[in-house]
Amino acid sequence: QSVLTQPPSASGTPGQSITISCSGSSSNIGTNYVYWYQQLPGTAPKLLIYRNNQRPSGVPDRFSGSKSGTSASLAISGLRSEDEADYYCGAWDDSLSAMVFGGGTKLTVL
Amino acid sequence: EVQLVESGGGLVQPGGSLRLSCTASGFTFSDHYIDWVRQAPGKGLEWVGRSRDKTNSYTTDYAASVRGRFTLSRDDSKNSSYLQMNSLKTEDTAVYYCTRVSSPPGRALDRWGQGSLVTVSS
Image 1 (cartoon, one colour):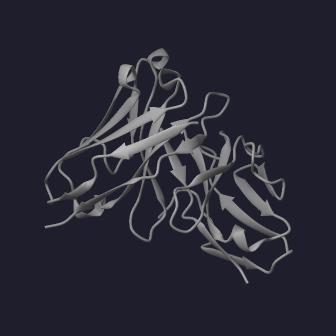
Image 2 (tube, rainbow over the protein chains, first blue to last red):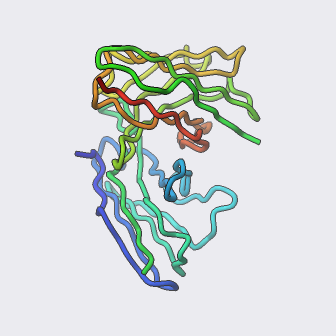
């Protein structure tokens, strides 16, 4: 059971917008930055969002992150077939002295 | 170009040991923490541990599931991080990723290696 809670799956059609939630606690999301990682099928994960809402260079602005209290969200607008992947949220947990991840959300583009 | 290349994976029997290496290039290795993350077949990401830089006294942190069995070390002169895994269990079977940790503020895992598969089985 993961420390951070994500829905196991999400879906949308091309062009739609979707949001993936990530719920934590005061010792992780409530205190520290949230990161989002994208894992395309058969590949290593890649950093998608850092410091709650910042995009690394090369990440389209269709991807955005937000944080409020002990929860965070990843929004994807203008869904494309190439967005089909697993998405993971992560944050440092001060109580555990460990990085914690959500269980991952499998995004299907119908 | 930033690159992280893991090596040393393979098949090992329960109770055995294995040492993974991560060789980095394209950035100043000594300036960065290195984290290891694993992914069991068909499962999600699990953080394994963190190796800090000289400025932070090369301290380490580990996930509860591997503490006391796994040991992280690094050799900045060789741009390399090492994960020594002892007393391996079948549940340690996973792809192990070496990751670069970004400089503060925040510590994102901003670059990932391609992964090295470790299979623990008799």
